[in-house]
Image (cartoon, rainbow, N blue to C red; front, side, top):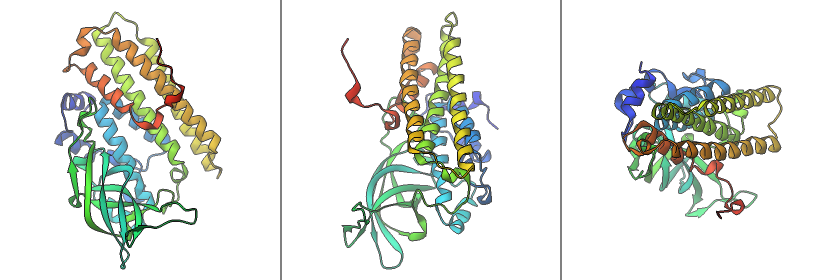
Length: 343
C-alpha cells in the first residue's frame, strides 16, 4: 500500500499517473466508492465518499481529480441494468470515464443497437479507462428524434476502450497527470443494454436520489479544499515564519460544512423527501462563493512566498497550477456580467 508521500513523489512533475499508483488504486478499490456492494463495490455513504475525495485531492491534485471523475463515472453502475452492471463490475479494474458534453450522434438501428459517431473533450483518466462514457443525440435516418417537449433526445452510452481513439491533447498548466484527453468514436455499434439515462436507476438507495447538481457541487468542492490544504502545507515549508493557521482552520471549517450538508441531504432523502430547487440553489451558491474566496486567498498566499514558489520543479508550484486549472471548471464560474475589472 502506497503512502501519501509515496504517491506525491511518484506524481511530482509527471505527465501520467504511474503504473504503481494505478495498481494501488485497483488494489484498494478506490474507483468503486459509489458502486453498490451487490456489484462488488465499496458502496460508500455520501459523507464518507466526500471525506475520501478530500484526502485524495490533498495527496495530489491529479490523483484526486482522476479518482473523483472516474469513481463518479462508475456511479453510473446504478443507471444500467443489474445484469450488465454485475458483469462489468465483476472485473476489479473496471474504470468508467468520459465527457459530460454532447459530442456526437447515436443512429438507431433495427436490432436494438445504435451506431455511434462523434468526438468528445476532457475525458479525465483516459489512458486508464476500460470503458468510455459519452452523451449523444439519438437520430433515426439521420434526423434527430424529438421528445414531446420539442427537445432532442439524449442518451448516454458505455463503449469499451478498444473502440475509442484517444487524442492526447491536454496542454494545461496543471493537472498534468490527470490524463484529461479528448476521444473520438467512429462507426461503433453499441447494444441498447449499454445505454443509460442519468435519472433512471436500477438500484434502490439513498445515493440514487441525490440530485446530480448537488452530487457534482459537493464532490468538486472537497477537491478544491483538499488541494488548498496541500497548498498551505507546501507554503509553510517555504515560509515557516508566516502564520498560515487561519487559512488551514478555514479549510477545516468549510470541509466540515460540506460534510454537514451531505449529512443533511441524506437525512432529508431518508425521510422520502426531496431536495428542493431552493435548497439546491443555496448549496450551489455556497460553492460559488467558497471557490471565489478560496481562489483569492491562495493567490494572496502565493504572492507572499517569493521567487522559490515560481520554480517549476517545486511542489508548491505544482499544487498552485493544479488548483487553478481545476478552478477553471465551469461548474462554479460566476457570471461575467457582475464583474468589475477596474482598478
